[in-house]
Image (cartoon, rainbow, N blue to C red; front, side):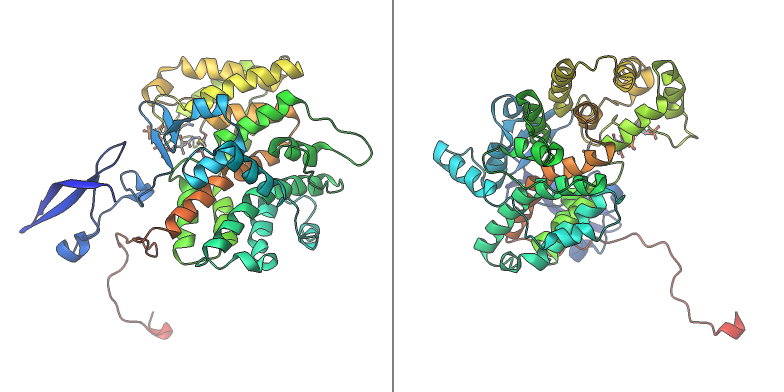
Length: 431
Ligand code: CMC
């Protein structure tokens, strides 16, 4: 537990309660209210957890004012420039950058867990052909508990390790097969001679009838998308994984819960929603109309891909993603694509508008990742599954950390009840 040399005093009615303050290695101090109910007979109220730390963690740190994102202390821009996804996975899972030998072993392990149990194909085939790939992923990942019984005992560290490797390794295969199924093409099996990102592109875009060569610029961009989404501390889906895990649920059930949460348009679904919004806008001349709608209090419309709960100056992932977008668009020569022209103009106009500046709304990672994925040829329905496969390592790392935490208890929020007080049941004939 972090350092506790300071205290805060909470005074109300005739009570005065002393509460310990924990000083973290970075970020604001945290007032420990665990004994508040026992000592003061009160709860705290914080819907949306805007001021509540739900756990202690050593994995990821975000400074929203500075626009800083650190994994195990290393800044995301350095990791995106110098590292690669599987090395970042190792860092998140084990806490330190691997030696060359550790990295080689880890890459070998992940590569050799990428195949799915052959019977899992029947799961895919049971879905309607037009099912959203996220629906398929929630179902198939949850169903892994039925296929991999030897890695569901969370009290066994070896089984936890195997489950972690299986989830990270098989997620690209699951996402790619969800895509192949939706377009009626045969499933493409993983290949051990390809990197993690190359393998995913191969499983998505290869067909048995022709040779498919992965372009190194595209596989680098894909790897960056994975790296930039790898973890993001206690966001909604990660908190969902932790809450599900706090009941002792098996790892596949916990990660399926995270995927389900990620799907929402305010979270991982924003990349799909952003591209759909750009298509709806259609041409740059219609941008002022949509900006006006986003500013109108009576209109629920929001500019998708803008804003963030924690980042209030810029999203450091978006800075790297924007560079990647430029590289990919250059390579593919798609500067004249009307969606991309609309995206560029929307970014310029929104950033120049005082409403967005005052509310500290900037393009987030999903604004640019959608543009890259569109240019690469992915349909919008695959954007969120790609986010899910990238975030799996973050969910798994946080899940493992929570299971090893001796202070871990079942997550059980309290409430501010404003419903009817006690009343006696009234027989139907007397109502
Ligand atoms: N367009 C227009 N206005 C906005 C937007 C937006 N995208 N985002 C926030 N606002 C306004 C909002 O109306 C509110 O105004 P007021 O103070 O007058 O009521 C103010 O800004 C603060 O917004 P909030 O909803 O209280 O902020 P939040 O922290 O609860 O929500 C958010 C953060 C990301 C859900 C929100 O900005 C949003 O809905 N953005 C669009 C969806 C999106 O791009 N999500 C992806 C986030 S990055 C990927 C990830 O981590 O999952």
